[in-house]
Amino acid sequence: MIKKIEMEDVATSIKGYLATNIELLKLEGTERASVIGSGVLAAIILGIFGFLTLFFLSLGSCFYISSLIGDNYSGFGIMAGFYLLITLILLVRRKKVIASLRDKIISKVLSA
Image: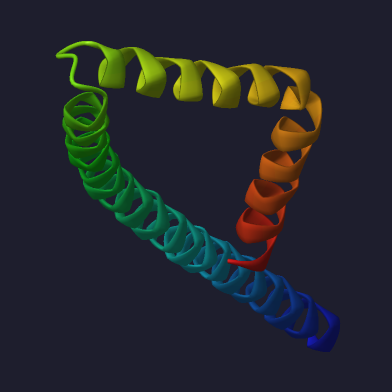
């Protein structure tokens, strides 16, 4: 009789322990997802505003360069060449850039 009661207590304790661990895993997963989700949303919003800022600065630069040269289209061609140069540099170094971004994402996910 004593062994049966002890076994039932052990079984009840194990069930309680497992239920608590499952609940803890759910809460940790929810916290991690919310931290990552809010970080992604903030990055998207910053990216949009950063893009708009760069876009309007580029337009302003195009018009300014065009007015310096005295031609309506030259400034746009020069800025296009500048962005083409940046694109080529990124293409050459893409493996290093991708590896760096991947490492940052992994460290962010694991530290969240």
